Every structure is written in C-alpha cells, then in structure tokens.
Image (cartoon, rainbow over all chains, first blue to last red; front, side, top):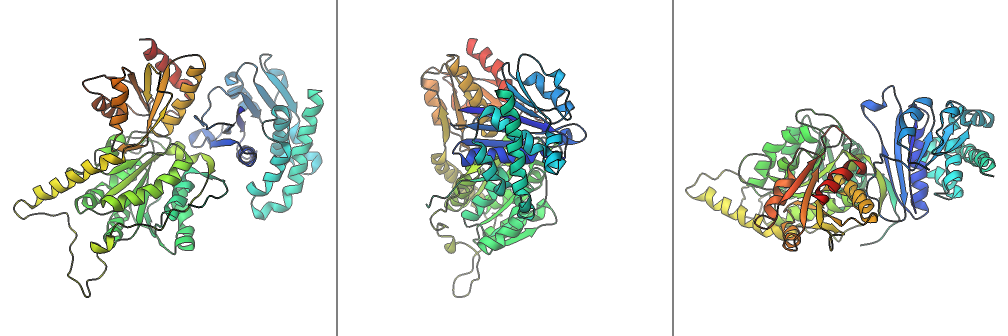
Length: 182
Length: 354
C-alpha cells in the first residue's frame, strides 16, 4: 500500500491540522508515514500546503512533486496543484470555494461543499475536517474510525470539547462522497 | 533497551529527545531557523526530564564556549544551531578538538553562503567534514536522513564524543528538522563516559591538579599532540557506516546522504520498477567516510553518481574512496530550491545510459 497527498488551501483553513491528523491516523493504523509542511515565503499570501505519505514500506521522499492525490480547499490551490496530479489521480475539491468546472477529465474528482456542510454542523472552521472525511472515504488509505480516534491526539487539550463535533464533520464529508461513489 | 510505542514528532524534536535519552544535562544555544524547535523543546524538558541546565546564550560564540566549558567539566553537553550560527562556533570547536573535549554540536543545515535562506541545503558538508575551524583536526560527523535516525544518532553522538574525547557533529538539514515521522523512543544503557573522571576538571581537592589546553609551546609538544590526534582519527575510521540499497546487481551506484539520500531512494525504487539497474549508498557517517563500502563496489566494476543539495562537496570524498579504480559523476541540486524524487530521474537515467 502506498498513498501520497498534497493538502492545500489558504493559511488558516487548517490544512496543516488535517495533514497531521491523517498522518497520525496512518501511524496508528500501523503504516509508515511522513508529514512535511511547506513553510517560508511561499506561505505568505498564496497557499499553505503540506504533504503526507502513507506506506506499508519505509518511505523514501517525503516531498512529492507528482502527487497521487490532492485535497484542494481553495481556488489558487487548484490552479497550482491540479497540473501536478498524476493521470488517474484522485482529488477532493472544496466546492464551496473552488470552481468544480475547472476539474480535468484525466483525473477523478470528488466535490464536497465543505464550508456549507461545516456551517450546518455549527462552525465553518470545520470545513477542513469535512474535506478530510471526504478524502478518506474516496481513497480508503486509512480507516475512517482511526481518523476520528486520532482527533484526541492532534487537537490540544484546550479544544478537546470540540472533538465530537469534528468527528461529526469527518463523518459528514465521508457520507457526502459515499453518495458520489455509488 | 526497552521498546516503547511509536510517537509522531518533528525531526527537531526527535533530536531533542535523543539527546535527553543520551543523558545530556547541559544545553547552550542561540535561536536560528530552522532548528528553533530544539531549544523550544529543551527549554522546559532539559530540567523536567534530566534535571539539567538550559541556557539561551547571548550569541553562538558564547554558546559554543559554554559547551567547551561544560565538556571540560566532564558533563554530557550539547549545542544546536544552523549554518550561519555554526560558522560562528568554529573557533570553540577547534579549541575543543585541540584540547580533546567531548561535546555534541547539531547543525540543521540551511541555505548559504552568508545568511542564505531558511530552506534545506547540504552546503555545510565541507565545513563539517574538514574540521571547520583552524588547525589539523576532524570532528566525527553523523548524518540523519529520518526522524528515527535523528533520535538514534544523538545517543550514538554522545557515546562517540566520550569514547574518542572529540567533538561530534550531527549534520541534519531543514527537511529532516521540519518533517514529522513516527519515532520509537528507547533508553540506552547507563551513559558510559569512558573514564572522564580521570581527565575532567571537577575540583582538585585530594588529587593532582589538571590542565586542559590547546596551547603547546614546549619544544616538540605540538608535533606530539598532532601525532596523537592523527592516530585518534585513524582509530575513528572503524566507526564508518553506510546504508546500502539495491547495489548487488547495480551498474550505477548513486551516493547521496541525509534527506537527499532518502529522496533519491524513491527515485531508485521507481527506476528499479522499470528494470533499471541502479543502486544507492547513503553514508550515515560523513567523517569517517565509508570509503571501504564504495571501494568494494568499485572493485566490482560499478560506476558512480554522487547527488547532493550543494554544488559538489561529498563527491570529492567519493572520488578519493574509489581512486585508482573508478570515478564519480556529480549532480548538484541548488540550495534554495526544494528537491523531490522527480528531480533526480533525468540525471540518473543520463548517467546510467552513458
């Protein structure tokens, strides 16, 4: 098993948090994982992104130039990363902020209105969790329950009261994609 | 060694935790990106875990001299910095080598020359492996490419420092420092300071006084000290290690260290899946350099390509290792540009087919 993903959005959309969560869940599921954030000048103004690799064997490069999958939280991220996605790759688009008509035919695209779904659950800021749930459902790279279980390990104690809501958001994203996969 | 659960941490934190597991009780440093997670972590944990001392010094020059002082007292002591800061430490490191003091220096290499940038680079290979400061001396140099190696090599670094009474450099880079991976923490056996109580300065009550120095003015004394040091560096050669991957039937052997070594591993795997006969040697020690491993491969008729994120430094050691039998081509990835495994496909294929 091998999967890599670039998760990209505006700074503040929580892309680093869901990258951490995905990698942590992968580790807890027994896989090898790497997580690397892109920091420095690139973070200012443009997109924030991180890369996660999940594999059953030891991981070579933690930096991926032709990703097998993407989680795209905003329009500039689609413009930047879709051209790098491998043919036949999988991408999750946050259709609340991304023009889904821009999705290319050479890749498999799942759309999820992450902000709207998160809004309905009570907080727009959980859009990242909705998108992650959608991604895990679409790729099956880690068990969904493992991701929810890992929330307590990546969310600081101060915010631990938000864990049940975040788990709901993950499930809502997964349910949305499950409909598209039928 | 007791096995524990895997924890998910940055390379910088793995280095910090490895130092604590090694029994380090003194940390001196001055902030610089991309290694700030180390002093941040140790500012609380040094006291909490090892009941040790954490000092944020006024400069890198001061931090390195504090390291010298603590080492002279026989303590397990360390400093950490990144390239421009490590340049400032070179005077003290030379004095430590001259007076045979054990200490650990971590360099989380960033772009250079000058202030460069805060991205990853391997531009400090020469500085690390040729001594770095003035005079004829060497430091042992370990090069982690994974977070686990960051942890393990800190334990090894302290042991080597006391075994040889010599500074040990751990040369990481911004990729290793900033990435997160699972790490299995472990506790080594009780720290062995290899008889430090017989030379360290810990108060002369009831014994002859001692003097630790790097100044040898008496007739013949400095020549004698240099001979001592050279025979010590000769003995260190036994510590050379490398990770050898898919070299048995390889026509071309790529030599790459640290984070670039692991990135190249992905490229090698991909080329292997296409039936290309390429292998990888990833030196784990940079001084001593694993020359024997490369020389043995050269004798089998392999060709070599050295890949580094600099403009050509380790390639000199590869060429020296195989001299008289083979040579090495070179591909440099410019510091300032983040590398990925795709970047190395074309150069490897080119040299494979040459």
